[in-house]
Image (cartoon, rainbow, N blue to C red; front, side, top):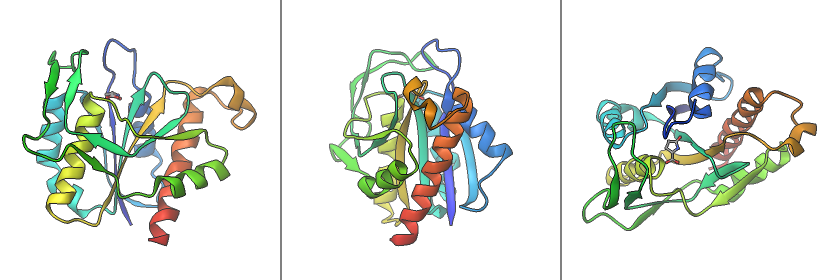
Length: 208
Ligand code: PCA
């Protein structure tokens, strides 16, 4: 099975983006037992950067069984499995090219929202077994993460692809309370959580 995994670089003045760190580590230690990884991309946190990546990666997105997109949410302390992407960019925070989009449709005339075809409850159940804190979220925000999610889901819909796409927001840090499960530095906790997420996705795909 082929997976394409993306993350984003630091944005809004934050010192780094854990999703970028995760991607770098996956590149060094690819989970070959779970997926043939066709690409790990760290994307610039900008609307235009996402557009450029999609342009370049058209074939890759169509070739993948799983497109797993990762990004940081500063307001969560657990993995957030995102169910929907909405057709609007509407965030006061400038992207890394200085662009602010307020109330702008992502695709003119496109559906108001797309939903992932991944069964989040089933993926979540596997995460729970592995002791990974997570929640299912119905709101991926209105910034660049929602933007890439909408654009990828739209592309898959347009070509009637059977590939599964999922956006997961990751926390800045996992709470101390899970330290008993993860007696590890934050960086390694992130890697452990994403390792279990990839495993959960693989198990889910095997069942489909
Ligand atoms: N998080 C931002 C954009 C990049 C990232 O990692 C978001 O939630 O939209």
